[in-house]
Image 1 (spheres, rainbow, N blue to C red):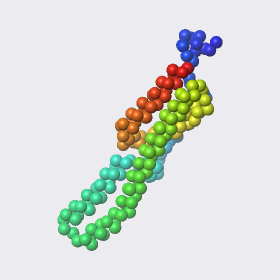
Image 2: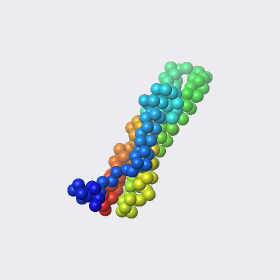
Image 3: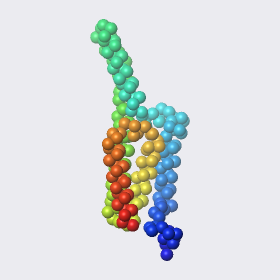
Amino acid sequence: MNESLRRGNDRPRRQPGPGQAMLLLAGIVLGIFAGPACLGRLAPDRYQQWFPDDVSVQAKLLAIEADHHKLAATGVTDVALQEYDQRRAGEKAELSRQRDQARANRGRATALLLALAAIMFMESMLGRPHRLTTVRYAVMAVLLALLLASPGTWTQAPLTLTAAIVAFAGAAWFMSSQRT
């Protein structure tokens, strides 16, 4: 007889196997090493390049535009404004690249979360343990690594999208728990 059933539980416990637990552990370790605690301190320029902060980058871009408008309001010549714009062009291009990278990271995290919810839904439809379980743990490991490496990834995510994904994942879990 199954051990969990002998203890009085009405359904067997579903715990990750050793390979699946190692995937989750690897994701956590990778996220910590690639995150602000390790990479952010050892190589802050590389960390900022890989995981830029969307809010601070946008604030810097707005400050450059505000400075341009302040100069224009003081009555400086068009030549002086063009010189100012030329001096700041490289900085604006780098800040725009960082902003786009931050948005791409947020999109990747959202895609991983959607993939995880879809995998959970497919598992619930199959109604039994399946090869998708390992895929689910692999996707969770990558998502954990990304979220630990870049904690600000979800700060700009729309609340309705996050709530819908969590509700979808919860429904998939509930459906799978009812079948066993």
